Image (cartoon, rainbow, N blue to C red; front, side, top):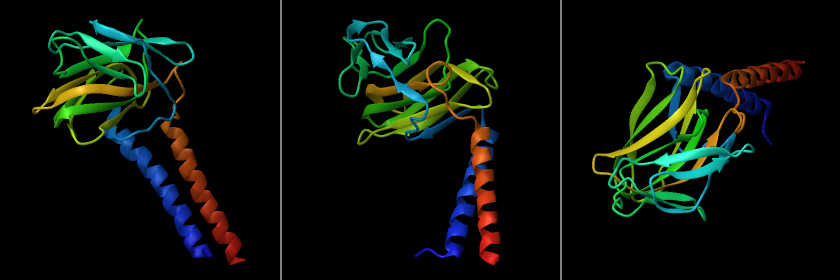
Length: 218
């Protein structure tokens, strides 16, 4: 049975982790990219089936906001398969997919994107994020992609920024077989908790730890 000491230490550790995660993330950039999945506040992009088109379209969220996918690699033609894991791949003359850009139509924006790059050849991906109120006008960084596994990324705008488009460019020899399981969130699509909520959670946990300490001292 857990002792009070163990319980207090666990609550304190969770509180500190919550507070530190807020300050460490907000201090780095207006856009945070992590490898892995954080689906909170996001909805699946429902693709329209397509073969050899310049623009793949889909919809997302209760308002059915329009999502566009385009490529500058090869012929620029794309295919969309809405079933299963919902993939966007290269069309005829663009089988070696090395670039893909997606975003909402009609000037709409989002604050979180989750996607899975299915690489046929290992290398790196350059993630370029355009948006509103982003320091310097855009965010750009490079990440490793592996042909032997899934390559999930979560891109989140913080501090009131918003994303208008995300471009994925294969570099260092990488080739994308497809990009799949795209989810978007924020605004009309779905609410994402503000960093302040995490701070309040951490503060509340610290208070709970202090209260428990007083009770056990009596």
